[in-house]
Image (cartoon, rainbow, N blue to C red; front, side, top):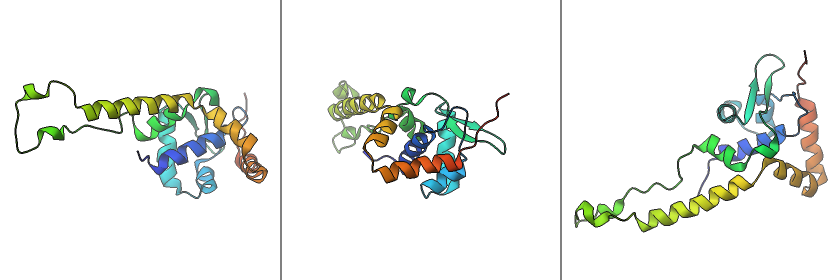
Length: 167
């Protein structure tokens, strides 16, 4: 299975935003710069995450993006579905019916065994992604990554965050 590069970008951006204090944002252009991505390319993925209720887009000069809910309530499956869409990765085209010998529809009353196996595997994959929480990924990074990498990520968030005024 091959996922788009947008999934990787979306997960990294969500992980960066998980390091913000409540109410703060980071501009999409800064997130694009952090990962060496085109701002217009990343913007469509950030908008998809916002549309799915994973991120919140805050307009205005002090605006940007932030998590719309707690990182422990965001799974990798949430992010994958927001970027890639909800349809299964495997789509059976029923090519077994396309050969030179045409059989009546009654010969195909049982679902294609390949389709059944592929959808069973995809269900297991989706369950595994649903069990992986953004909060765990961030905590594991802080615990296990090279301290220089953790320091760089934290410095990026501190440099680019935009605190929001409270009323």
